Image (tube, rainbow over the protein chains, first blue to last red):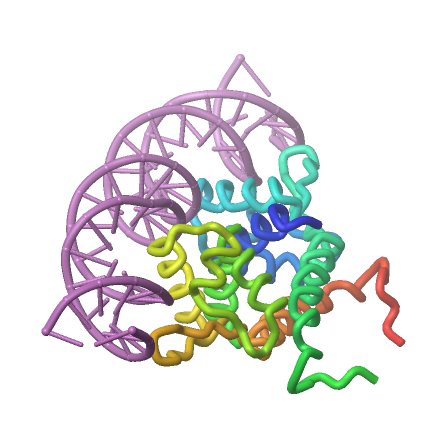
Length: 105
Length: 105
DNA sequence: ACCATAATTCGATAATTATCGAACTATAAG
DNA sequence: CTTATAGTTCGATAATTATCGAATTATGGT
């Protein structure tokens, strides 16, 4: 994951509604949740939620699968892992230079 | 770190300029770097950079220490660690429910 | 065919964020 | 005291993002 992608994903998670949605989906597990479920659980107006879901899907944070009339939203764990990996590299580059707060085993 | 704080920090990192600044500071290490150094290294106009630095400091991603005429910017590693911790909790809640891609030791 | 449900798209508006030159403040050096 | 340097603040504008009702599309059930 490059800097552009990382920034894009971070920006999407950097919104309370979208972060709440993502948390909800992660709790829902690999089966995901329907748009309507999210809507009822979080009380976000349908069109607003749709907007946020589209953005999250655009950067690869979630995946949307159509099941007849409904749409299942599934969190992309691998994507989050990559994002965390990117941040961790950032973090650890400098952390050993001095004051080793996290002594490597 | 609660959801509000996490979202705020993620939003700040979710901007290419600020993410570049943060990476630069992490590489600089615990001694940090001067505003002017960042400015010259990344080629961001002074007033724009000042704006971004203020935002990053506001959410605790960096710390700014005045040294006579100059200002040292230091990355708050602990803050990033907390943020990563928050994301990791998110991620791992659902990851074991099925398809254990990351088998716990 | 008709109605209900699920969700998106449209469209208009509000709110936030980004950008950057110019003016300003603070400090150091001569 | 004057000048130079480091950085911020101001102010104005552009660009992006957020919000949400209304209209629309798609599908299933009766």
